[in-house]
Structure formats: C-alpha cells, structure tokens
Image (cartoon, rainbow, N blue to C red; front, side):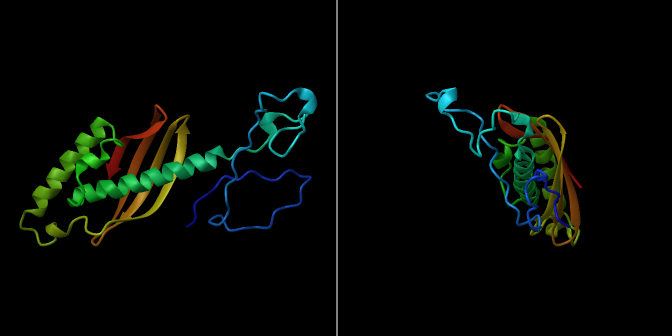
Length: 182
C-alpha cells in the first residue's frame, strides 16, 4: 500500500503535469513572498517566487503539510525502531530521553524490565522476543495544530506488532507524549 501525499492541483491555465507515481514525486519548496529591504515598489518585478500585484499570497500552493507529515513519519519510524530495540535489550533507554516525555519514558522502562524478566524465565520462546525488529510502514495524521497521531507496523521473528504514537510540537521540537506498543 502506498502513502497518501497531499499535492496541490495545477491551476486550470497550465497544462496538466504527466502522472508520476507518488513515491517518485518531489515536493517543491514553498515560495517566499518577502522582498529585499532595498527594493522599492517601482523596481520590483514579479517573478515565480513573488505574487503578482493582483494575486494574493493565499492563492499560491503551499506544500508545508506534505513536508511536515514526512517529517513526522521519519521521526515516528526512528523512535519506534529504537523503542522496540530498547524492549529487546539491544539499545539503552536513555537514547530516547530527548524524544519521549517523562511519562512515556518511565512506561517504556517498566515494560523493558518486564520483558527482560520474562526472557530470563523458562519459556522456550521467551528469549526470542523482539528479535530483529523492522518497521514496515508508518502512517500519520494531524489531529490539531501542532499535534499528530501516527501508527506503525513492526515485524520481528515471531509476530507483527502495531504501535501507536502521539507527537506534539514543543519549542519547535517534536516530542512523543503517548507510545502504545501492541
């Protein structure tokens, strides 16, 4: 299954762009609207980066949602991979302290301790829990301004797991405020 990417539709006056698979489509940098401080209205020419005098700034397409969603998916993928490795005992918990809030960090620490205790037990598959985890897919959705919820599918040797994550922007940094590992 492929991810859904938000791409603005071309204006009616331009010829349609040939179809490109979503995985190969590149997101453009959002246009800048500011003019240099030395420019006066008489010597500034409209360019592709600036709106024409009759055009509003809102009519230009903005790809910020696509870029932000990709950033959230990348953060989620790395953090989920690291969290599963913490449960496996192959990564120290403190490596996630900058990304997880204190409540999530304590919960993950408690679950890792329980997993280690189970692995030391006599069950034949207990020592093989969380072996070779791989994040297969990540999906993200904005639920409010500055708040995203994402889900990930993680495959290890024994089973497939679902992971749910809630990310909130705090001081221009994304922090995970909820982490549920199935």
